[in-house]
Length: 212
Image 1 (cartoon, one colour):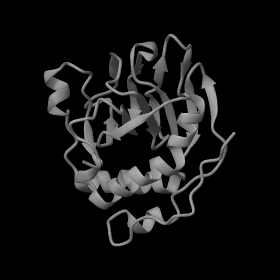
Image 2 (spheres, one colour):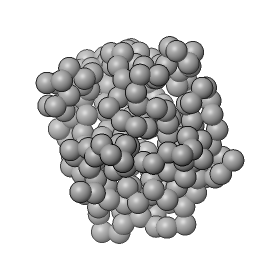
Image 3 (tube, helix red, strand yellow):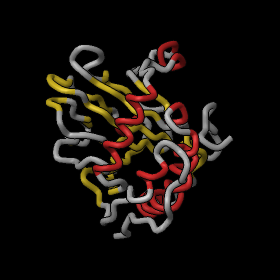
C-alpha cells in the first residue's frame, strides 16, 4: 500500500501556515469496508489548530444552496473564510498525497476540481447530527478533527460500518453517489468537528472550486 506523507512545507505568512509546517501524518491507507478507504493525512495537533482557527473566524451556518436544495445542510464554515492560502495549499496537498491513493483503488478514476472544503461543527445545542443523504461528488472525503465528544458517528448502513475508532486527521474516502448513503448520528455531549472535501468528476466542475 502507498504511504501518505509529505516533504513540502505549508504556506508561511498565513494564519495556519506555521502549523502546517509539521501537519502531515504518514502511514499506509487501507480499505476499512467496501469502497471506504482510511487515509492518514494530518497529525492531531494540526487538527486542533484548524479547529481553533475556524472558531476564531466564526460564522458556522448552513450553506444556502444546500438549504434551498434540501441537501442535508449542516453548521459549516468554508476554509477560504478561515485562510485562503491554506485552502490553496490543501488543494496542492490533496493532489500530491491523496489523489494517487484514490486512483490506485478506483482505477481508472479521472478526478476533476475540488469543491471548497468546509469544517462542520455539531453539538447537542445547535445541530446534533446529519440526516441520511448522498453527496454531490465523484469522491467524498470526511475527516474527524477531534475525539472529545459522545455520539456523532459517520454511519454507512449498506456497508455495515461507522467511524468509531477512526483517528483525528484520517480521511474517510468513499464514492459520493447512491452506493454510499450515510448520516451522522446525534452528538450527545461535547462538540464534534469534521472536515468535508468533495472531488468532482472531470466533466462536472463545481460552482465553488478551490482553484477556478
